[in-house]
Image (cartoon, rainbow, N blue to C red; front, side, top):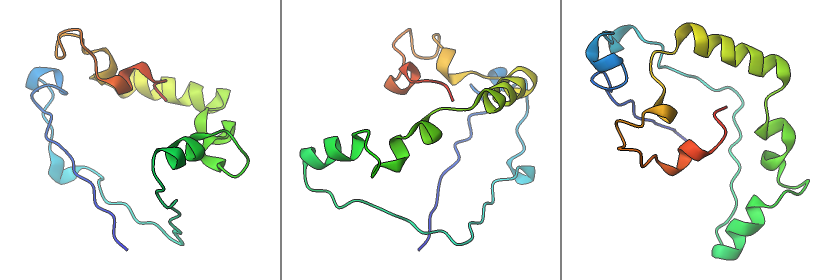
Length: 109
């Protein structure tokens, strides 16, 4: 099985209007997974979507361990944001004319 993703060149808007140059040739975009075991649920209509989103022991992905960061990890995330982030998609009101995408209402971690 293969998994591919795309990386958009957002240099004009995610790099302070192009002030920060992005050289995609030197970026660490390669990832390798060992012993990966993909798991999926068979789609059985709208009911199955609600069922898979329910907070039950069988749905391990909805547990606190998978949906919330520990205080230590949150501290480290905030340190990285404060020291390395040059663009904040979740707060770019100008780009979206105040009509932010739906994911911007979710927790930012």
